[in-house]
Amino acid sequence: MRVALFTETFLPKVDGIVTVLILLMDHLIRRDIDFVVVAPRLSDTVRDYRGRKVIGVPGVRLPLYPELKFGPPTLSTYREVRDFKPDIAHFIHPTLVGTAGMMMAKRLNIPTLASFHLDLASITRYLGIGFLEPLVWWYTRQNFNAADYALAPSRLVQQDLLAHGVRQVGLWRRGVDAEQFHPRHYSEAMRVRLSGGHPQDTILLYVGRLSHEKQINTIRAVLERVPGTRLAIVGDGPARADLEKHFAGTPTVFTGYLRGQELWSAFASADIFVFPTAMETFGLVLVEAMASGLPVVTSRVGGADEIVRPGVNGYVFNVGDVRGMVDGVRAILSEPRKRQIMGRNARLFAETQSWPTMMDELIVCYDDLISGRPPSI
Image (cartoon, rainbow, N blue to C red; front, side, top):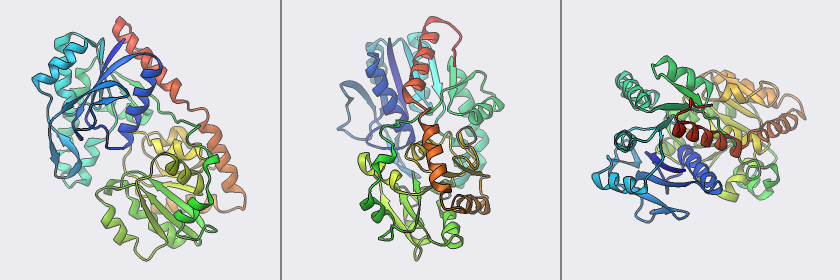
């Protein structure tokens, strides 16, 4: 089997989409499945991934999202994909690279699969261009219906896509590497770092992109209303300067991006994971926090309702419900051992969410489409 992967973002950028893509590529390598990646050329140094070719697409940086480049594939791109002779094309949220790639795949007469990773329609509201939301949904519908099959990361997103007119939508579930994200990575030194030198306090943790739609600013209410809490914000993004001003004078630490051992240690060394985002297709960090032994307090987005059992491994609140977020943190801290018990429950759940299982289901879907069978996921 030979797979052409088309993506709108790639290394060296690190985000939820790239994380899932890396996990997919690593799994394809383990299963001895060859692939090529078509992605925006964000760095001249990234020309392959573990020996598999990366076809860079030239583009320009977006004013509202300077971490990305935007530009269509060229005739040269098509020739490189054609010469690879793929059996199937998988589009990681087709937008521009994927749209042109879809036409390439049709010309090559190979099956196509589109997976949903980013709620672009909702993001328009946070960029102040909400009037474009219907147009974005129309464009999303066109792209996903152009594929032979579509995949959503959660049942909530699956229902949303169907409601907006995408015809065939399966479920590609998300998982976690429970060996990497593990309570054993607890570090007293990291706890001191996350708490600004006050490790005895309750450390609330946020990990992810620092952008306005994540509504990280609302966590300040928890710091103000729940005594003894501190906040560690791991990540970076366009809202960082505004957030640093917003949290000035509060017990908040900004670490910037953390990777590898430092990231695993940050998860394992905190107490409660807080995630107030207004939009998320799944919320991969929720399962990573759980695997690290943290109860989670999250807005009801993406896959939250599928993984959080209120009072057992965390709490869920409606988007924008600051009081619900505060109450969730308070509930976890209401009894001396409750946080530890919920953290153990979170870990037990995460251990059932294996990435290899999820990726093997995707490979079966590839095989179904190549063989002309109805997809089994």
